[in-house]
Picture: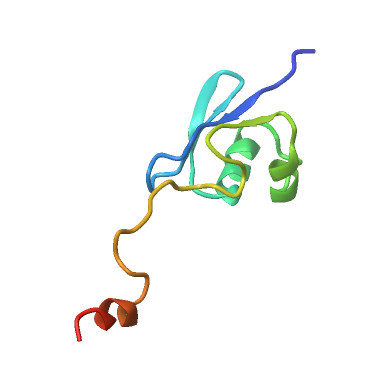
Length: 87
C-alpha cells in the first residue's frame, strides 16, 4: 500500500496556505478547520482538527498548524490606538 502525503505550503499573505494531497492541489486553507475539510474531501474522513494538527504525515512548510497568514497590518489594531497619535 502506498503511503499518502499532505503538504501544507507557506502562507501567502492573507489568502491562506495551498494544500496538496498525494501530489495534487486540493485547495486553499485559511484555518485548521478549512484544512480538515479539504482532507475530508480528499478521503480522510475520520480526522478531526486535533488529529490534523498532530498527524506526522503532514509536511508543514513555513510554519506549523498555528500559522495561517503572513500578513501583518501596518495600522493600529483598535480605533482608540489610531486616535491616540492624532490628538
